[in-house]
Length: 399
Image 1 (tube, rainbow, N blue to C red):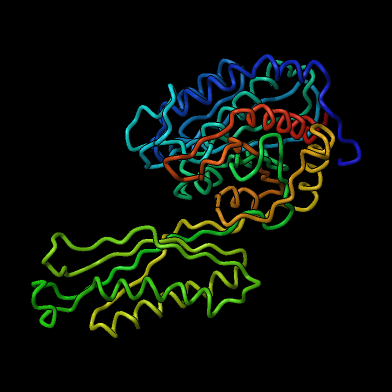
Image 2: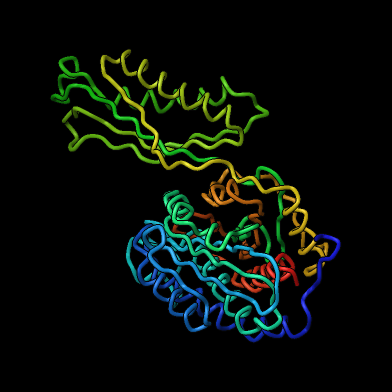
């Protein structure tokens, strides 16, 4: 398949050029109207309406709010899936633009609006030229990636089995890579992720008399600080692992020692053995440290954590060849795997495929981090992703 890879003909590239403005407009509309995980009703409705208009076979309500579109080409070929995530994050946006989020406290801060716009435009282009398309393309619009809750129910609903998908592909836009660059990584590409909660129980009382209480905040603070030592002292420096506490909740007033406190955080690794080791040690450490302060602590992990994103070798080599042939060798970036996570990993456990990254770095000195109010993308990366996506799908389907 790599040796037979074909680049886009002028009529395909002209089709991309004709749709550049509508691609950006669609992305901005999704950005203006973000929806949280499993609440993507408007987004799913637009996706379904446009897929119906493009004459795809459409299923809605898949895995609660997911959408699937099946496009059958006029020539025989293979069955290939393309996956995009559609949900937003609970953030107040800092961007000042006409298309800034109109829903306060909700924001597309990870590029999912762009992922959806690219996937939908890709489906429409292929449908408009289905006489030149081989095989069957399955477009999976997945909800709730941000809480790692959407992939599993969609797979359970049979999105990879009816029709039976042979390979799956997708892209992730990233501000860590320059516009015009793409990063194709075989093997581990994105880290696993596990969300945890630590509930510390003590005995509340007056702030003036701490000796008459069992202070859960002090215990929780020491648990938080010591957790970092589990990574730095017990895990090899050659095995990356990141532990972050993103929430510390406890107390109601300056002079009241509360009865409980809660820590919430995430753990990310690239190795399943390391992942299991740290999870067990975190439980033990939290419980024992709490006892030192005469409190009790229970650490629990959410059941819907996701494993490492692992791109299969053959399919990664194929996407790499598509990128080099279509965009030129200079467009290929060579970045290390990232510690961010994505439940595309579950699709890649079920089928071979590749989840590659496309650059959207705005190109100035301001920070534009993912999952932050300042997130901003350079929309010039959207047609790059669309062009490579079209090349990948046409070749994988059997162009």
